[in-house]
Structure formats: structure tokens, C-alpha cells
Length: 279
Image (cartoon, rainbow, N blue to C red; front, side, top):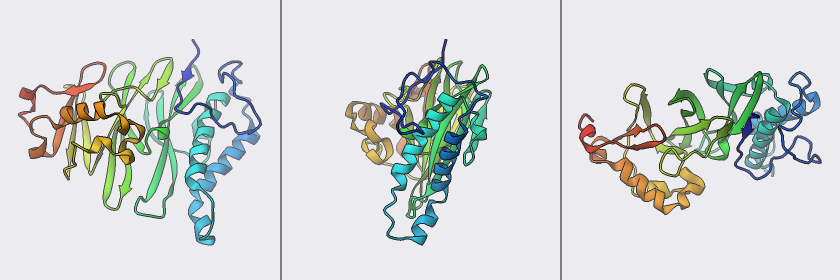
């Protein structure tokens, strides 16, 4: 069965703007015959992102849109890996952040020039039958993922984060489903694939299958799930926002600044109240 990747965007930008997109896995190219010119162009675009701060330093009035350029380049990067079957380790400018068996995360990014600091764009790759496949995690949330935790044969938890603003750091718990597809929209937390909380740390206990977040500061969890800067388009889902509030708050959140969720084999759910006593 061919390995197909689910993308967030409707269409991807090819390294050749005049090329037309068809099924990227029909007549899959031989991994040994990589398009060298396209690879060099992609690496140049990545390097421009890495060096973008010098563009603004040399020309404070530059109209170069680094956000649009990085988003388009990340789409091209994923498209290139899927079409050329290129080992992402061979693409200059990418940093490997985490690996579990045949699954890896890679990232790159740029300095925002403001309190946001460094903004990280991540992709997830899977190696299968000596071929490589990728998905654009940054199309959902910007973060660097340094842990890949297997939950079962197809579900994997990514833990990481990124600077949010000033002294706030966003901590992300993101679940992906990997079968014959890479599903980056899997509804692990009610109807969302990820949780985003500030200033704390996640831990996952493989024995109890519990995900815990211990924070330094409280957040208005009756409101936080509706913040577009934290949940993007998912923030528009008011029903899931209410359900997430009820699930996260539990019985001792206000006292402990913490929450614990239970993995039930398909998604995360609230612990039974009697199990929250140890917090």
C-alpha cells in the first residue's frame, strides 16, 4: 500500500512554480535520482530564512515577508521530501530534534525581532521501505519537538514548545497518528490534536498512561482554549473549548496549577476524580 500524507493546505507549492501537482506517489521517483537543482533552490530558501535577521539589519525598510516566505518554504520542503524521497538529513539547514525508530522531527526557523524570539517550524518524517515521507506540523502550530513517545502501534505523542512572548514559553503536547498516512489532525484532546500551555512541563508515564502538566503560572482555562494565538482555527470551536475546560480543570487545578489526563487507547480523557488525590 502506498504511503500517503495528509496535508493541511489544499495545494502545495512546488519548487518549480510552473509545475502542476498530481498524485505525488504516482510514479514515485527513484530515491537515488534526486533533482539536484530543486534541492539547491530549496536549500537556498532555507538559508535565506536562517539568515533573515541580516536582511532587516542591512535594510530596516525591507518589505521582505519572512513569515510568508517560511510558510511557503516549509510546504515546498515537505512536498520535496515526498516527491523526491529525499532523506531529510541530506537537506542543509534542517536540524534533527527527536527520533523514535523510523520517525523523526526536524526544524528550522528565524528570529522574530521582537518578544516572540526565535520562531520554529517543524516537520515530521517517517522512513518506510527505504523511502521518506513528511508532514508539515508547523501548519498547525509552531514549535520544536524534542520527544517522540509511542502510545501504541499507531499513535505517537510529540512534546516540545517554543517562545510565546516576553517571559512566556509555550509548551505543546501534540498527538499524531501514523499508519499508511501521517495524520496531523488526529483529535487527541477532544477535537484538537494538541494542547498549548505556558510556563511549565509535561511528563508522560508509560506505565499508568497518564500525561501530566505542572505549570509555574495559572492560566484562565475558562478562556484559554478560545485564544487564536494559541489554538488558531481550533479556537473557533466553542463546544470543544467548553469540554476541554471541564476536562483540564478537574477537581484540583486551581490548587495545584497542574492537571493529569489519561490515555484510553484512542485519545486523552479526564482522570476519574478519585485518581486526582495524589496531586
